[in-house]
Length: 340
Image (cartoon, rainbow, N blue to C red; front, side):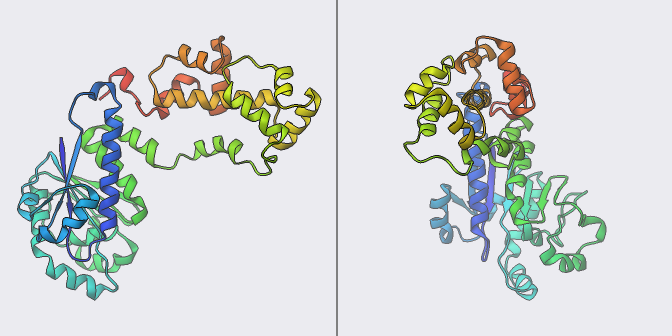
């Protein structure tokens, strides 16, 4: 199990530490879904670390963690991670004053790094590392907010300004606050393996190709609540595994087949049968991503007895055959094959 220390100090952006803790909690939850990990300890445990633990009890209750002193942080080793929250300041002079007041925290960071602990520094948290003696080789991401200040304190070779996220030895850093999730995903990969990190990324990070699949649900101009089209859509959604029957569908919608087809095409932009295939493909993708059911079982649950038809529908919807979609997007990715 990896012990994660969330470093607290005056003027730290506590919300960033909460995001890190939430990401680790999600990683633990996803790991518990993996057949190989059932019955085993969760991969991550986190705690706050501070010079004055009592001051941070309230924050610890929110983050659901205990608080330890800096001596525990200084003893963190290669099985540990240290997440440094970025400082809040209004000008460089304020940042420098803050840094002068947290020598003990910075010394604990340096000690943990020397022991092999993984350091995670999002956004301006890199300021706490400037000037420290860290294991070589190491480099830091460069937030634009403090770029000039960093350049005055570190040689240019250690400041790759063109990289949003920098991995260097046992140090991970990011130049923007918005990259905290991506940064934590990489930290998960380092400490718990690529497979779990991919599931975390598939869960938390934006997947542009999936946005297209939502268009059918967000389409503007839906018919009124009790409309012909809405009744037909509800029926298809509730009976998507059953054979398509236009006559029955028209009867459920209380209209003629011709009228149903006309209204459906105008409102949804496709025929009822095409809409049903969309529903089935969405259902298939969901089952591929969150279950370990066989392709045959998934096809049957989605109304397909013909595997070639099932594969064709999934490929048309996602651009990938069912097996490839599962490998790319499954919450249990690679684990069916026993990949760690």
